[in-house]
Image (cartoon, rainbow, N blue to C red):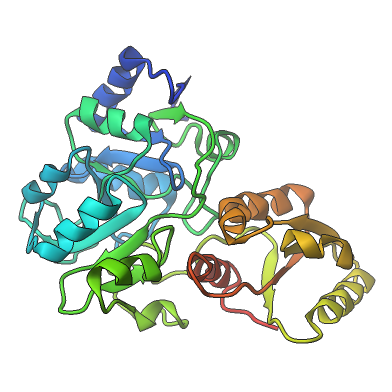
Length: 344
């Protein structure tokens, strides 16, 4: 059983000596979990094949699922990617550091295990002060997918990340809760039209405002296990709790429909969980958890609530459907994956 170095660090008063200790782990080819503004990341040296392999092993992750390379300075993108045009600078100038990942053609220095055997590389500059400090002090580019067992809900708080990943990695930095709650937007800029491969906190509307035409890859809108995954989360069922998840389509009778489903399952001896907007909490039977008053709060609470439902021991989760505008697109992307595309 691996002995994990675990340390709590205050993002508002960073202990550089501790950060340097974790930075050395990364330099020496080890794995470190660290907080970002989106979710917790599981980091290793992105340019070290053996180190990157340890990420896949710790997560139980398929090796054709590409990793995101985290940098601490915008100019570092030139060391690992090519084809950096005006569109790339617009995105970096408007949203970096922040929750958006850019996909570009990779340089030879990026090993194929990091890029999921593709000729592209996904690059992000996080805004979380601990993440930036760790990358800088380590002196390496840090590959960092979400710090969870592959397929499980991404961890957004230190308790869940510690419970799930202690003894699976060399180090864990506990730095409080993430403030976005969903992984970064992934934007492919290798083609003529900017294409969103994974929706996130930087929305289609945000990107269209500075880039003009932006499209969403059709591969993330429907179930297709045969697609080539150019970004994390495109190919496999993701974000799933132990309970079976269903999304209930919104129509005139969706509240009654959910309550009828709850009654049927309870009669069968099942424990049922409901996820909904806060204003509807009192309308439902079962184990009801409100996700928030608006879509930003729903995004922040989604993964945390899926994990909470596991702790409550529910067998089935019914979730309300959410509108696909703004960050709602990202919410429904994650929720649909968690449900395995099951709508009722």
